[in-house]
Image (cartoon, rainbow, N blue to C red):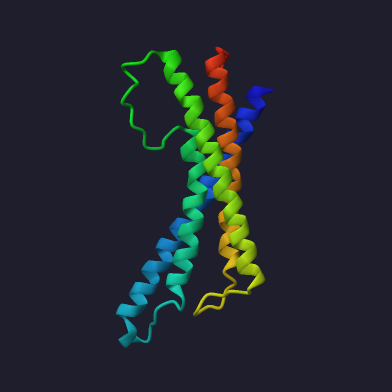
Length: 169
């Protein structure tokens, strides 16, 4: 059962990160095209209207999409002041506490993002140039935030199993 859960969570985190990376590449290409359009206005080209709005939305989505993969692989920045001084059992307990705190943070982020999205939708807030509903960006970010909560919960389970001495493979 644990192996299937591990595989499913890994697949979900990986594909969320790949989707976010694809969007980020699209944002980079769009930015380059827009800059070229600005530089070549004398030749009849023009920048992409609302390019900065699309950059804001795309990069926000990409960041939230990368969080689950980063956390699953324990790739967050860490300060290992006590790692060498303490033994493996103590470090495992510290990892459980860190994963619990990360789960709380991920849940709080998703919770507040949800209410922000509802607020933007209720007030029909739109972007200035393209007039896109702002809640679309929040909804896209929610995808990554929800996957982040799932991965954080799995990571807590994984480290708790390590403390209990169970195999996490």
